[in-house]
Length: 119
Image (cartoon, rainbow, N blue to C red; front, side, top):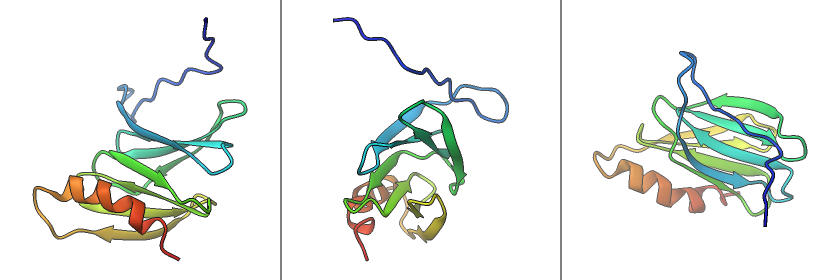
């Protein structure tokens, strides 16, 4: 089997340095791919691979993402002790900061799935 990529994205920061991609998730209908790259959340159109928007809500790396089952919200989290809940319209809805020390990254990633389903 031969795979042909539809698009290849070299994710770079403002200093033109390539960033590591830590997590990805699709929205409910598969039309958008959300990517945790560096300290940004990148949202791509899956039909043509175009970047829809680069979201800035974290002061440090973004390690984890989760999309709500209803497709109305998604969440991002990382070692900056923050979880950001985003609307599917790509606006920030809520930013929650944990007051926990060294385990904050594990806590933020594991709590994403429960926070993103809040109504």
